[in-house]
Image (tube, rainbow, N blue to C red; front, side):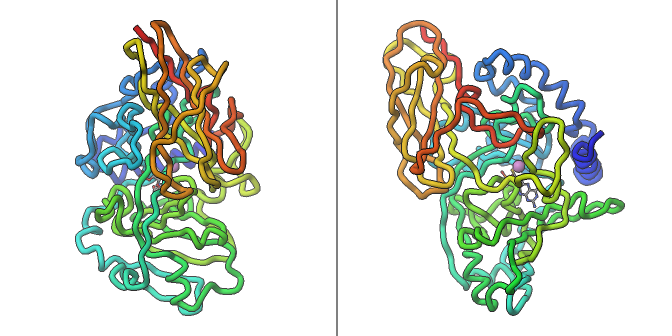
Length: 418
Ligand SMILES: Nc1nc2c(c(=O)[nH]1)N[C@H]1C(S)=C(S)[C@@H](COP(=O)(O)O)O[C@H]1N2
Ligand SMILES: [Mo]
């Protein structure tokens, strides 16, 4: 067992002690291997898109804390990992709360923490005058709304042929939501500015940690480069509603354009720090490295998301004639500049129309292409490009944990037209 798997095992131990759901259904590594054997084989055959997302569901019962979600659109991988089905994702500019994926490293805290939202306390450190502030106080410092794609680092992991360990996400560990919150820069400014040595913004999650484990091995604490300060929000609303507990309410550190893990839920401490967090989730997890290599702080951390798109409709079948092919596309760290669609597995490409409004660089946008399709089978792919001229690659190289997949070929879908 390498240290990453030990790390997962510890997380699993925490799940087993802390969550009312049947602990034996926890996502152990063995269970991942068993449950994804079929998927791996299909992915190897280049037909992962053929698998109906529902077929991958482990269990359709929604855990209590997310009982309000739309069960028809969710795949329950475990009580703490819920994926949006590809069909349920659709080609929508904004993902409704009931359809947004959930990924928890630790059991979610009790609903008690959202009973009196404005009383939630967050400690602001690494500034001229460090202090603990309530959410009510923070709200007096400013407000901004930012539509942002939220995407887990492992979204697309199921498409890698090497069967990377972890939740076998297809495309549904991603959504696009509007965050509303206090710009962190305004908070920092109000509190005397960053200390001179500051190089990172470090956010600490508000979960209660189980006894008997070294907190560093289990706590959710992430550091992002200080460069990101100007984009960070301390968000208290999502899609215009108070932020649900499952998505980090009452307060979340949102880093638009950064992978999911950096968006720390129920944030209880935000510190401008000289060094990165000592937590394992920062030091060795979420590090990109070759297959078979252990995580190490010298390897790239999962920070900025890259250009990506995928088709969400139609899936599997369509009637002959004009077929409306739709999906979602994201430009990465520069604006989305175009999306091409292929109906012949990448032999030829046509320019799709970007149908969704431009809501800023961090937001995804739906696209559409009308294609006149005769009866037959088609491999439908999409390829996004950003304003810097970076396009999605055809293939994305495997990496140990199966992070950051944006290769267009593996994201293609097989369509039968009759
Ligand atoms: N406090 C805390 N924040 C967290 C996590 C967590 O387990 N605890 N999981 C992270 C990961 S890995 C992802 S992908 C996103 C998922 O956000 P969502 O559950 O709102 O979709 O939250 C991130 N923030
Ligand atoms: Mo994640």
